[in-house]
Each structure stands twice: as C-alpha cells, then as structure tokens.
Length: 137
Image (cartoon, rainbow, N blue to C red; front, side):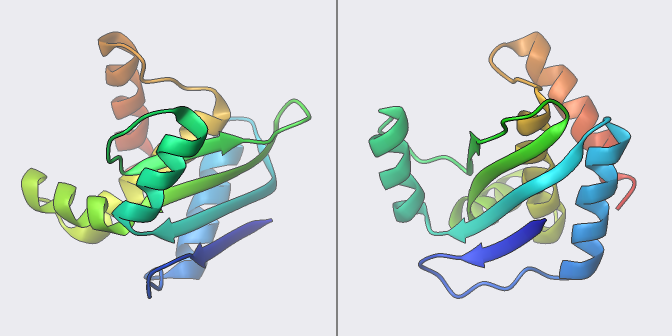
C-alpha cells in the first residue's frame, strides 16, 4: 500500500497514479514489495520539529525517512518531505520542481531499501541509483 498525505500545507502530488506505479516498480526492481509506505508532504517548520524531536537535529532538511519494516523484502515506513525545501533546492539546482520532487521521493524509498548517504562514496552510489530510477518515470 502506498499513500500520499499533506500535513500542514495544501499540496497535491502531480500525477499521483503514475507516481505510485513508478515507486512500486522501483521497489520491485530492487527486489522489494510494498507493505505500506506513507509519504507525508509538509512545511519546513513541520519537518524541523520532527528533526528536533526524533533525531535531535536542529536544522532544516528536505526529507526524513522512518523505517517501520518488520519483514525482509517488505517495505514499510513513513517518509516526510518538506515541499518548501524541495522548491528551494529545485531553484538552487536549477531543475524543474517536479523533477526534484521525484528525486526526493525515490531518495526516501532507497533509504527504506537500505541505501545510505552517510559518506561521500555512499552519496555517489545513492545519487547514481536516484538517476537510474528517475529515467524510468
């Protein structure tokens, strides 16, 4: 199951059915099934509070992923995305908002799958995976 929610902002995901199919195909191509993933779109301030409360980080971020998976190869989690941050990143990177949003959507999914971006080498691997899956949208 795959759900999209807005928490403290008015936001509707463009092309939700196509996006759901793409996310499911991405998971399957990595050898995983969807048990239940919730994408929650929110503001910078909302995500900052989550960052402080659960991760003890006092800074803005575009995404926070909580892995609730209990079985191997079954993805379950909550992925919070700051639409404010995605917009700002799209501008600074000079890319289309929807492209940057899809990058962040797949980034959260890749975290649930087990990819990390905790050092430069892992960041490069994560970015390559993002690029690979973005081409399939």
